[in-house]
Amino acid sequence: MPTIYVSCNGCEDGRLSSAYVEKFFKINKCTMTRNAAQADIIVFYACGLTKENENDSLRVLEKLQSTKKTDSKLIVWGCLTKINPRLLATVYDGPFIEPKNLDFFDTVLERVDVPMNRIHANTLIPPETTECGHIAFRFTSFASKARARIRENRVCWIHTVKGCSHACTYCSDRCAWGRINSRPIDRIVSEFKTGL
Image (cartoon, rainbow, N blue to C red; front, top):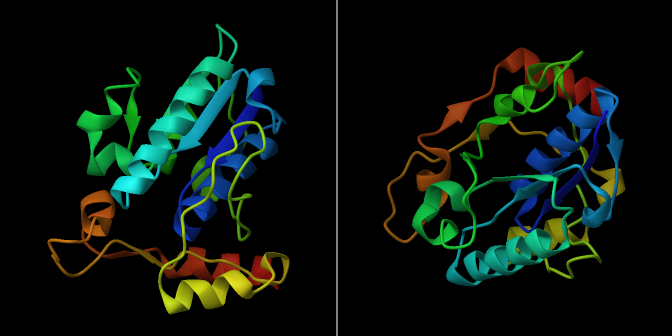
């Protein structure tokens, strides 16, 4: 099985989604690494919330491309793929995976014992990696600052909904995630029980 590197420079949602991906690869018997240069498959969740986040995503992506082995596969997914694909295309010529398309990862491995739709994850991947030196999304709201003070290993993170019910012109969430969509209640309850 391949060696996998998963990274994210995004918010809690991006880090939780990346935790699903990381757990998917672990459960399917892949070896995980925190060093992109050792990976056969590099998965990067690219943030596109603000111009600063977009630029950080491009810097991280360029660093990953220069660090990876020549035969390694690079997968870029996340909000930037929906918010500003034209900018992303200036440094990346691979497929753009939308942030809500977790099922895509079922196609990455030759053999999948546990498909993505059966994965439960309720922790966040680390917000930065020492190999790339990138910094996670800067918390701006009071609520985010309060959550940042909570020790992550004592918190169970559960996605209940994705998307947005508004159409604010200044916000990129709806562009990235679409209209608000609740996850199935049985999945939410199952993840809650797993987190207890």
